[in-house]
Length: 138
Image 1 (cartoon, rainbow, N blue to C red):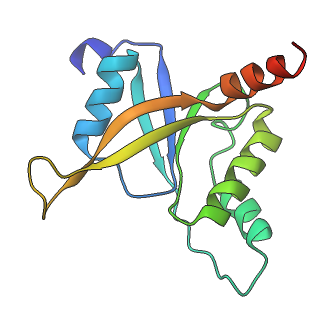
Image 2 (cartoon, rainbow, N blue to C red; image 1 turned 180 degrees about the vertical axis):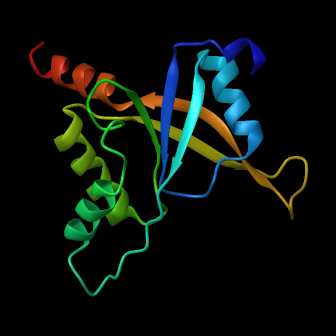
């Protein structure tokens, strides 16, 4: 990370799930040559109320400078599917494009009982959308 101190490449990770461990952050910084700035956002929905409205409020709690459309954003989605979908939709509405998505997996190879998450890859949802749309017109 020392070589990233003066780095202008910053990846804002909006974390709606578990806090990222140091190994995941180091993996991202090494693979993608960008300093990680993690913003932890608690997601706790009351399923008796409208999920989307609650997600709008959650997105509104994120500092505006991160959502100004000029910053690279990746998300670690929450485990609740309805929340993940609503949060991605609201983010797209606010920033004008789909965020990057952290794909994490539980690694049980070293310790099947006390295991941890690892980074599989970062998915560029906006690129995937463009590829899918281009196939529509072939």
